[in-house]
Image 1 (cartoon, helix red, strand yellow):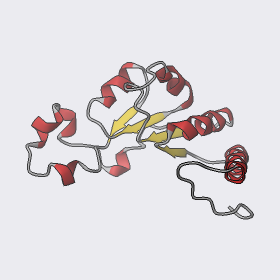
Image 2 (image 1 turned 30 degrees about the vertical axis):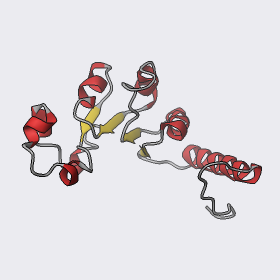
Image 3 (image 1 turned 120 degrees about the vertical axis):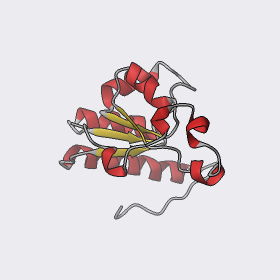
Length: 147
C-alpha cells in the first residue's frame, strides 16, 4: 500500500509495528467499503479475516472464505457468526463440508494441497473416508452458486 512502510512481523513486536498494523487494517477497511467488489475472498487467518468479513458484509459485499476456520476444533459457536457474514466457504478437509452444510453454510470441498504429496500411493477413496473426495470439484466450480 502506498505510504505504508513494509512490515514483516514474527514473535514480539514493538509499538511502531502495532501502529503500522492498525494503519493497514484501517486502509483495508476503507477499501472494502469504498470499492464495488463483486466478491471478497478471504484466505485462512480467522483472527484477522473475521473482522474483514464483517466489514465486507456490512458494506454489501459477497464473501468467500478459502481454507475456512476450523470451527469444529475451536469455538464451535462461531459457526453462527460465519452463517451471518460468509456467503460461501471453501474447505480442504474431507469432513468439513458436512459440518458447514448442516449449519446452513454454503460449502465446497477442494481438497488438501498436501494430500498428493504426503500420500499419493494410497487408495484415495479409503484414505478420504467418503465418496465426496473421489472427484473434488474443478477450481472453476468453487465459486459456483455464490450469489
